[in-house]
Length: 233
Image (tube, rainbow, N blue to C red; front, side, top):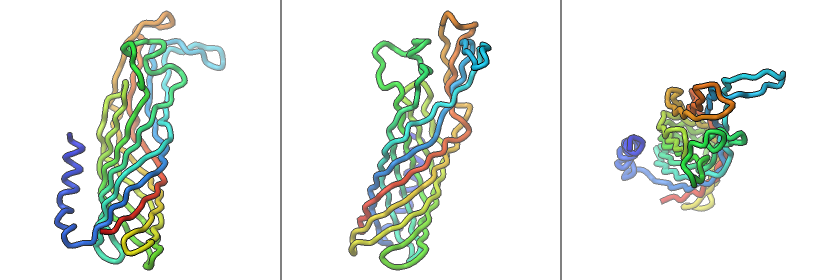
C-alpha cells in the first residue's frame, strides 16, 4: 500500500501538467540482470577446500537475469526536456543450487510448496529526460527516483525501498504519432540489511542452534536494456 501511495503522489500532480503539455505513452520490453541477497548459515557443517570444517558460512545468492516489461508516461516541457513517470516489472527467480531455501536440509517449507524461488521486482519512479540534440533521431539522458517493491515468494520478507535510476539511449521518430526508443538504465535500490527472516531446523550435521538467516544486502543494483514503442497523443 505504501508504494502505491508514493507512486500516486508522484503521478497525481502531473495530471495538471498533462492538460498543458503533449503526452507520450511508451510500453517497453527489456532484459534485466544483477542483484543478490545474503544467506547466513549457522550451525551446519561445511567442508572447506583445505579439509577443515566450519559451522558458520555466508552465501550470496543472485537474482536470475530475465525479461522485464513496463510503461512510461512522458510530458513534454520544451524541446530539450520531458517529465517522465515510469513503472517497470520483472518476474524472475533466485539462483539456488545448494538447497539453501528450506527444501534441503531443513525442510521447513510446507509440503507441496511450489515456485519457492520466485521473486518479483517492481520499480516505480519519476524523473527527467534530457535530449542532447534536435531532429527525428535524438540521443538522450534520463535520471529518475522513486521506490522499488521486492516480493520474494519465500522465505525473505517483502520490502519497499528508495531507488534511483540513471541511463541513456536514442529515440527515433517514425511519424508524427509514433516512434521507437532504445535505452540502457542502471537501477540502484537502497535495501535494508535489517530486513531479514531466520529459520530454525534440525539436522544431524548441526551444532545447535542450526539456522538460516535470509537478509537483504545494503543495496540491490540492477541493469536493464529496453525497447519501447512511443505513442504520441
